[in-house]
Length: 262
Picture 1 (cartoon, rainbow, N blue to C red):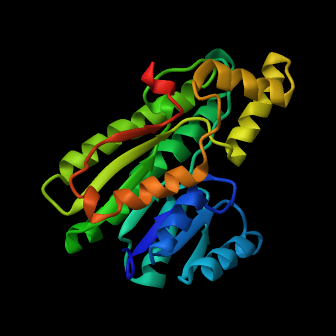
Picture 2: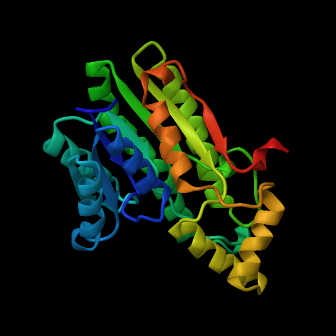
């Protein structure tokens, strides 16, 4: 379905993650993929080679710290240099540091805003002109259930994910009369490296074991009481890149075990 196209997926260098699952699903449809992450290229080599071997597509890795606009620019430039174009942009990279707001260090607030929200803006502004030139493109922003509802102790993360949903709607309206779509996916709890770290930090705050903190989170927020499988997001992203989804614009899809149904 996507043969001949190129996708950039940020925050995709770890196999246990939403970004990698999305990259894998797009590669399965024949799409060349540019992975990115903070890890040095040598540390990501096994992931790149495994994906290329499994899906039979070209895979490139670009180290990028998306808190720095220059790295976002370098990422998009590398994709264009390697494949000549960016047809699909998946803004997945994210970070979080849970604290009550009065204890949240300003430096951590700035990092969360830069990675979760500003990086998406930079990537969109850099890729949208070429999508307009071809009158085809897919922009998928990974938000969160916390882009739809609030939650204590994660004010910066919640603010940025609400911002991502708003950014998605605005870009969708700006491109509504074109062949470009922009949508958001709002994951619930998913077993990713980021969530595992955050659960550990919350466990420390609450004086619980990791398993106790995880169980408490699921019981409180996710009615299914089960983590969402990363592969679910890959399947949804592939659908949003299909022609069947050509008139789905500005939607924020909650995949959250019933969290936002209440």
